[in-house]
Image (cartoon, rainbow, N blue to C red):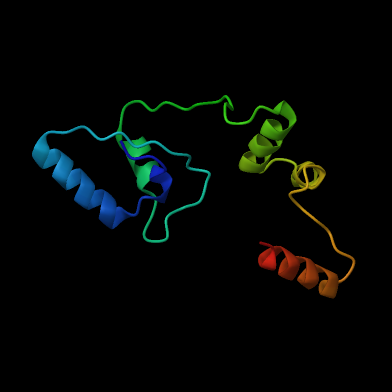
Length: 115
């Protein structure tokens, strides 16, 4: 099982699938195609999804207990209504606005130097 398979690059996938094929093993790729992509040549999860007769998509959020935060994460993932997503992230303290560039740099420096 390969978790976070959206970050799997093509060269590593080829090596893994070659070894699995030689061993007669089955490989399950698990991941979110809307999250961070691989650093190298990517698209493995999309190619795999197109190559098999059936995929399973999870539609419920189980990771977050707060339903409002869960909804913001789903909206962020979908790309719908970026203004509302921005406001939601700001309400949760995940986006902070600063009056000036100097104030922003000071806040970043303070955060980076915090113990």
